[in-house]
Amino acid sequence: MKKPTKIEKKVPILTAEEAVSYINDGNTLAICGAGGGIIEATELISALRKRFLETESPKNLTLWHSSGLGDRGERGMSPLAIEGMVKRAIGGHWAQSPRLADMAQNNLIEAYNFPQGVMSQLSRSIASGHPGILTHVGLGTFIDPRQDGGKLNERTTENLIKLMEINGREYLFYPSIPLDVCFIRGTTADAEGYISLEDEICYMDVLSTAQAVHNSGGIVIAQVKRVVKEGTIHPKKVKIPGYLVDALVVVSDQNQMYNGSDRFLSGDYIAVTGESEPIKLDQRKVVARRALMEILPGNVGNVGVGIADGIGVVAKEEGIDKEFTLTVETGPVGGTTAQGIFFGASINAQAVMDMPAQFDFYGGGGLDVAFLSFAEVDMNGNVNVHKFNGQIVGTGGFIDICQNSKKVVFCGTLRAGGLKTSIGEGKMIIEQEGKFEKMLAKLTDITFNGLDAVKRGQEVVFITERAIFHLEEHGLVLAEVAPGIDMEKDIIEQMGFKPIISENLKEMDKRIFIDTPMNIRDEFINR
Image (cartoon, rainbow, N blue to C red; front, side, top):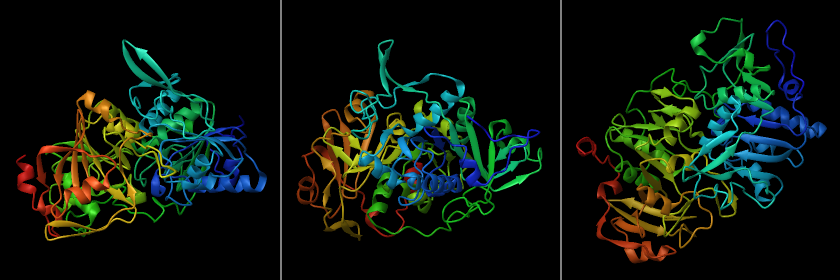
């Protein structure tokens, strides 16, 4: 593979168009980044799209992205969703870039979904020359080759993931895949290619990806905001050594995210606690409030994207956000997580880890509790989040997290599609029922295996706006009902199965449904 020429150790500074000209037909291209434009090399993605539309080259690329990039619309990986350009995509999450997901759904490309944590760690294995990763992550789910093997459509036939047994225990083997090119992003590069990430929100897997591509004999292309004299970046601020970098592309107006830059998110400033406005009391906040009651002082937790992402905000409202630590799989530790497409960023983070290291902690059982959203649940406590309603969504870090956390709290509404509720005065009223059933008798697509969780002795709780369920040996048990809710009409009749009714069935805490702070700090501290 021909690389850009370095002269006297200096890395060539190219235009985005020049840089992408080094990508060849059939290459495997790794793209780092997360939703909302977080460390996304947007100019390189745009230039690659432009090149293909003008020249029909490069063809038959394999795209590799451990996280989900985009705005759930036209940005991120969506610009590369062009027939002929992409042959195969291996992604950790798909919904942020729906155009690429549509191609997979319509059998226009080969499509795989690997767990985000496995993919980030696999980049280290590729860099190290290891054959792959052997792990329990994914067993009993659609990742398991006894189910779908991570394949997302009929066009995808090659079995990449293998089931293996060692010392009487089952594991999944994920193979190392040589990476030919990568798009990474930093803030400042010196003339020899040493790069710092001081303005970036997190590091993700930029270093391990650059190492993997370099050691595969490939080309590392870095988009940066500025270039300075060689040797003038403090060595402790350098995240990517220059010998890994083959080309620099300077984008002087590069923002942290699609909607601009905020130095609170990069940790340069610390926001004053208590300045943020309370979030509206709606069904999302009800779920977040109740979920908050599942955490204990001193716990280390993870909060996922979706309805669960308001937990940190609610904790701040209640004045208990400093009593436990929430982490995000992209790397932030502590602080308050951003919501929506900007999930992955945190305000007032106390530390920022490399994403593979964050998943090392998760995979080894370090999390006390995880708060994750669910799309579909069945009577055995199986959960589906990766493919539903005819759409490919992907798992992100879901499998890595929920299989390994000591306690898992799944969050969501009981039904979806047009659900309208009225909340106040200590009760919940269903004004318009959701069109789609989320509690189904049996799931065909499994992202979390409830029976396996029970065998592991995992504590599993399902929180909705009107009911709380616990997972026990014989299935889902209805444990709490919201005040104002008719159990038979508003819960059981809205499910695809009848849950087990707890002998200790109780009413949810009325404070959750009153539009004032719950004032739970004292009882929280004394738990």
